[in-house]
Length: 563
Image (cartoon, rainbow, N blue to C red; front, side, top):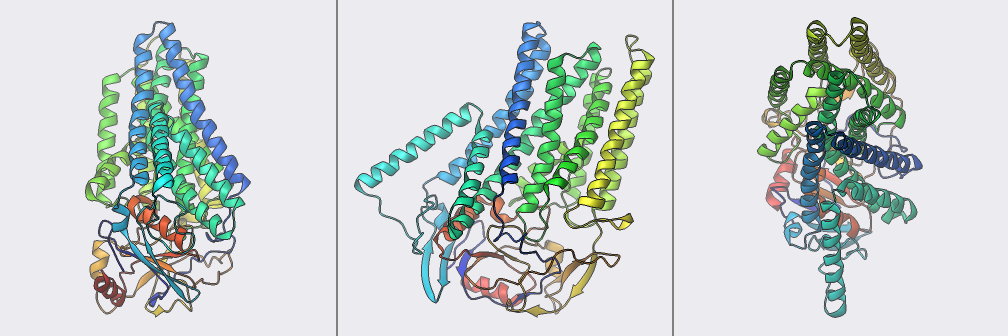
């Protein structure tokens, strides 16, 4: 059987067609998602993320109340606006996700249909009532009868959950709830049996992805403007109140933390990328802490003297960055308009720091962005130094300039430490860092000899996506050609090869896989997510996820004939 979710049929089957030859990027048993366990470090990281979230929000509200008591109503209003408006936007988006995930509709039944074969026995699955998490643990999925007392109890539980979620979102606590829920799922994945452990870990990865996206949106709508505002007030008033320093520091830490956390969760969700260690995450936090600190200090100095021109500069920079991102043809979302909105949001991120949105040779793009940001920081700081008011002495002005320069230099230093020593793909040195050598392989092997690159073991990690231009080139005789990443300079692989897993059912999705640094479709498309959770919970053996290999005309024909 097969069905569609936004044009993406999903089937769960045990027979596997010949797949494309995998690349050299094989995972070690320790890093393989099916063997990965929720650790104490993961729990501590979530608790620290909660602390960062509370410190950022509480310090801003405390400072707003202090401005009100000091009768600085204009500063009070601006501080409060940058707290409330972004929080409301995030709560609305979070509640929309909850409403879809928890809705008792038949949408998920149109997202996929599955046939599972395990241990020589076939079982049929449907995605109706996909929110019933344990509804098919006996390997037979269907609609469970809910009549009488059971139906009333289930209705009461659903009504209570809706009221609870309304309460949570009205009081702006959606992020807290999602952090706690992810913590609960992670702990459950460690305590449960093997099959349930993988099921809870899979759900924990989905929840972590949602938190990362929500916090990234909130940070650059709230923490970044708040940081610039408070620094501008400090420079203009020529004094630093303790609460101002606390609020600015919390906002800066929140920004650097969420960028590094987002990159870690994204890498953890993909099987074609090595996971990021906590040592690498710590260095990346320091990298963004100092570069964003220098950037916001330059903004604050300039904005303290030229408010109108600062607004024009920010809008112009955002427009240029957004156009640059759109011109790069990103592939994050499931529709064109969602992609445009996403590119506009990334344009806001580019006002403050670098954020990778395209796979490939990022060295040139990152170098261009770094040079532009360096020139802008120098220009903004110079304008302030030349046209500063008489209340700022030469000595204090020189200190401010040195702080901007030294902060940016430290950030650049930690960036090189990350890429040269702690990058997940291995230490990279010289001008060849981040530049893979492309080797073509023109053969197709069966899964008995290798693990397909478009197959994801549970919990999900990622799959390659081919864009429009590549699709046309892959339709000819060399349709089964793809690129294999190998490091230059004769670098030796640091991880032992992993024996491929070919047994068990496979969830087949009729979509090409998205390229890193995009999320996989089953993280973005919530219908696919609901379907996969039901199928994974129903299968006696944890299934793998397989996206369509566009290089295989036989497989494309098989999908077209089954839909």
